[in-house]
Amino acid sequence: MQRIVLFSGGSACRSINIALCHKAQLTRVVPAWDSGGSSRIIREKTGLLAVGDLRQALMTMAHGEGRAGDVVKVCNARLSSNLGKEDALSEFLFYSEGRHPLLERMEPGLRGAILNYLKTFASTVGTDFDFRNGSIGNFILAGACLAHNGDINTAVFVFRKLCSIVGDVWTSSLDSDLVLSATLKDGKRIERQDAITNLVDEDANVGIAHVKLSTGTEAEPQANPAMLEALTKADLIAFGPGSFYTSLLPHLQIHGIAEALSQVDCPRVWIGNILQCRETIDRTLGELLDVVSEQWQGEQATRHPLVTHVLANRVFYPFEKTIGSFPYLSHAMTERDYTVITGEYEDAWSRGQHDGEAVASALLDLAEERSGMKGPAGTPLN
Image 1 (cartoon, one colour):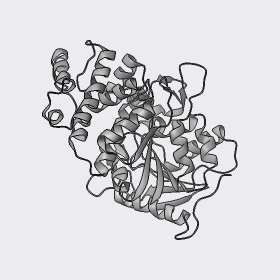
Image 2 (tube, helix red, strand yellow):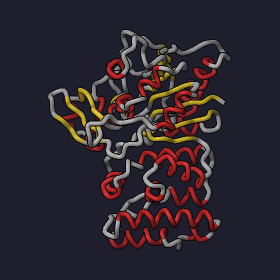
Image 3 (cartoon, helix red, strand yellow):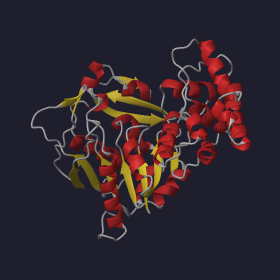
Image 4 (cartoon, one colour):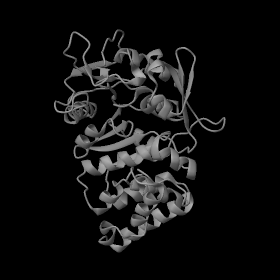
């Protein structure tokens, strides 16, 4: 089976992840700088890196692999959002004290591990923690990390074992204090990932000039060794789909990733989004790839491009067509250091979303070409 590494956010590549599960050895690489929702509260209370995208990717992997056992059902559960704070705590205790029927019927070893992680999490955050709308999987994953001295890779390993997940999911960095900021084209600065993703209309129309990923100190963000090892073994590396400035581009700013990518001899594919979003209003796919190239050249002094292939969704309309609030993302590419593969990558039933099977098929074709089944593909960077 081909080894594919997919840089992504938490949910945008869900259908592609699911389609690849039984066709490739898949490794997901997700951000560790999520600052919204329960991830933000957990980060503030525990000092851990963001676990929301990580847990979401693990659950997608479980779904794609056909894991629907009691452990996965518990990890995929979410507490009620319309309760009072005390009622939400009571609902959490229903899980952490082992009274939920799914927990009661589990094998004692599994049940004990889950309860231990939930209790570790609860003892760290205290009874004043707001559990409303919280993910049980987030709490278990954070509890596992706390129980293993803050080692998120060990926590992920344990979580995968609990859920019988085969595929790998890693954060691109192990740093727990990562903060993403953006500078708009008018010089205005926006702090935190969640604020950038949800730009107000005025700021979204101005547009993002660049983003910066930083730690709480002067030190550069450092790459996760487990993720770097996956890169060295990859038959294909893909970026996207996902939020361009908050889920994809910042990975290149993590120390060690650009160097590792520069040594990889395999296709490196950018999966174009179907639609524009608040981060990319009035941008074309070609313009976004120019931003990628600029970022790449800044991180890695090489004459070779990062991207060897681009998957671009065929747009049928000669006029601006929107799905919801956002238009289709136009190609409009000029100078090309990469091969553009145009196809019908939009899901016929979920407009604006990717057809996971179609994208997976294109990626596997490129990976097979690289392995010599159909001839060479990809440009070595070294």
